Length: 356
Image 1 (cartoon, rainbow, N blue to C red):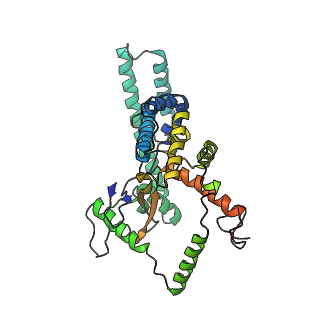
Image 2 (cartoon, helix red, strand yellow):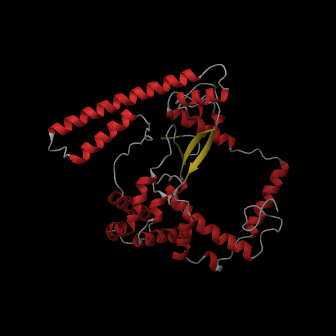
Image 3 (cartoon, helix red, strand yellow):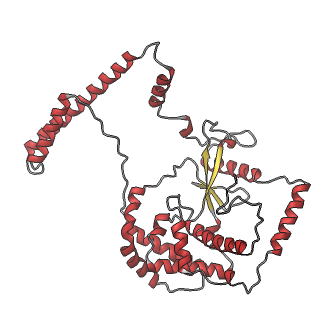
């Protein structure tokens, strides 16, 4: 992952890095409701609630990661291969003999049994190799000029472990036609490309529409007396947002995974609610919420060296997504309650389909 210094520095580009989370490990976070509450309490009680938004966000993150380190197991988990099955009688006899030896002897105290086990394991490995060689020879004998092309292509793809869509590369052809030599240059090239692509050349008709839209937005300004936009965010609103959150999505720059949010203890939930209300009252967001990790995802069957072959995916903070859900719910209620949406609009509205 590297930071790109193109025009807008709010984005970090992650190059050639798999975005995959071990959900099996995070599933144990279900025990956090009890343990995390105690850990969060210990951390948060040492830091009383303040009106400093940046400090509150720092304390909250620190408590989350402290709780995670105490409850989520550490270590690397090896990727398991599917079990190899075969009906060979010789192999089945060896496996049964090994199982009997493991059940009838304590290998830690019996040296002879341990030596016998090593011999059986060696015989099993040799039998596996013999079976694989035999299967490969049978497969080759079954191929001839009558073999369908589909079967041949499937076999070729299985033999070719490096598929085109998962091909790793950090050599991107820049705008000036020169290839990049490292991840930093590739991130800068992609960043400049995305910044240019996001600029829309508006014609006269579009500019008129833009002015009319801005005028309409200014006319929709809500008076300060409107309770909907002045009342603090409630715990029920936060609970609703957590229920709506897709916690399986990848985390943003803060590193807080959705599983951590779902399993928050009561103390940390109150602290997060205070951060939301403090941000709502001040009209500001924590600085980290304004950043995003941009992951270039290669489009299928596209040239790996072309900048146009990558689709940018932005990963934002989970906590920021929570607050977006809360604010969007209030704005939607305000618009619907006052009939401010035209009846002709069907997109992005509940109970309305664009095909109606």
